[in-house]
Length: 114
Image (cartoon, rainbow, N blue to C red; front, side):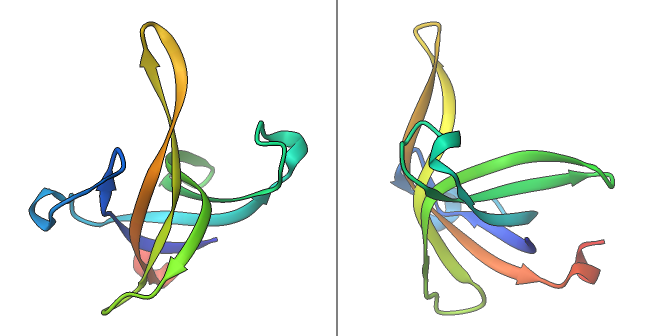
């Protein structure tokens, strides 16, 4: 777990122009392994999650990516690339949507977060 300023570089699998990107937001980032017995992929997955802190014990999820790869970036931080998972209602049914996502991640010290 670490703190980072994260910028989403894609939306719905499409690259965003710099003018279309939202400013970076500070998140708690976790990268963990998900046991195949606890997911529906029938294999172990590496999962990166973004959380926003609401007080000392409450966290709200803001992004989920599976099979993340770290990519170099010219400048501060690095790129985290993978498959983003999100839920959407389509024709009245809740469905999982998977698409490519890239996050620009700039780690920050914890003191700067508080």
